[in-house]
Length: 117
Picture 1 (tube, one colour):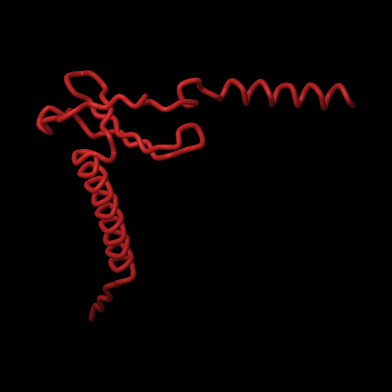
Picture 2 (picture 1 turned 180 degrees about the horizontal axis):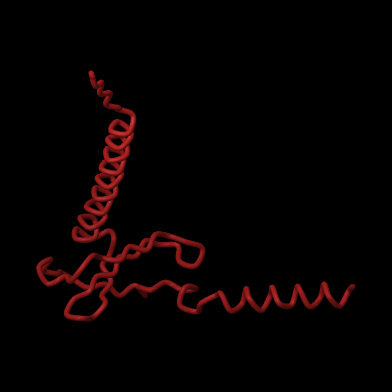
């Protein structure tokens, strides 16, 4: 019985260790931020990593000419990116709520037809 419990706990420990990635344990930006950036050269959406157990600061990563660069969240560009992302999340929440309420309204409305012979 004891050996089965030990084997089970060993398997759990192995699975836990395999699930941990080395890149997630540190901050992605090592205090080296890009200076001024023309917003027209930023490709795609920026990646925003909020503070976590492994990195206690907010990190903004943008792609410029196929290279990942860090933007200081306290810089004017960083503030604009964070502001726009929060607006986008609010708009998505509002549109999702509107869509859900429209679907509920359409499904609750029923049409009755009567036929006469």
